Image (cartoon, rainbow, N blue to C red):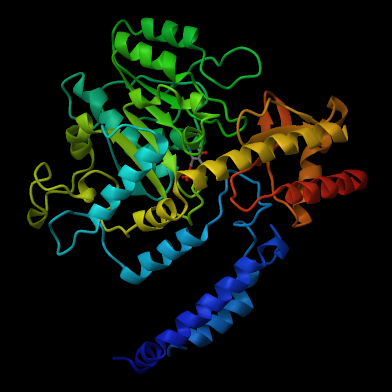
Length: 467
Ligand SMILES: *Cc1c(COP(=O)(O)O)cnc(C)c1O
């Protein structure tokens, strides 16, 4: 063994101890670490011939790279839809690296870690009140989950014409309907060879809504004269957390032949709350669902899962099968994750979720979700009270979409946001909503409290006075 490696091996306990201490220092100090910084590095560093050993590299990391880190897992990072990581999720994440399993098959390749993934998916179905008729698996994020689900949808579409798109390529025009698809679904259409422009934008409900207008949807369906289509619907749009009406869409499933996909990346967690689960009522009728764990479940990146109805497993295998290697066996007989999703080798991504679910239970996640929604409403009210701001949309869940008050302030909105973000006290993201420049604050982090809102409102007043 190389002598530096040998030295590291002998010093393993000390190395991990240092990582633990550094982790505690960072996480216990999150409140004081800026949510943004302008630090940079000269990334032209040359690779050394001789290894430095882990501890010397840790020193270099702390000196050069650690200053780049921002408090994105902290309580006042409200940009995009960004969760943090709970203690149990970090425990599970560390152990995922330590055990370093390649999670693929059941009863093959010398291990059964895929059973942990099965168990975790079942626990998630229970948390979300979804039936066992869904099978699921873990991918890196909601983008890859949308890719997985819509990949199967594409195969389903071909089958309606007796074609196997996975084998022979796309030979028919695929009809896709959506009202307010997330940008990652559009990207998925590009990655799947369908084409990012090749979907029909259905109208949204009139008024201040992003949800699909069912009358316009049905008009478009009728125009297909019985031809199949794929519907991409939203359980939580990123600007205003609006939801399509799943009860009505379920009824449409009885009348028309279509693949129904729901992007519920963060909004799916409405299901854990008695107060908000009406928003997803009827979603169990979908063919596929996307849900992120690195958002509202507050586990570290990269974690999301797809759910596809078990009755579509054969289509899913046709889409993703990797079975031309004889040692992998027959994909229909021997379940192997590498035949049902994009990745082949994959870490035991379920473990941080498994630890989180058992550690905090249904009540823990109900509390996180309800607390975040209450904070969104609280922040919205505080904004209105200040009279400097106005809401661009009602607060339906955990996202607050607002702007500086009045048309005369429109040209100042992004300048205000940049100055606010530069304080490092809070981070929010810009948006354009119904033609107006706006700002989004998304409440997803388990640590956020009322005191954070007080801090942010004060900061916003100061920055507004300065621009
Ligand atoms: C965040 C998000 C995505 C993309 O998720 P990643 O985890 O970043 O890949 C897709 N859809 C919705 C609704 C989202 O909020």
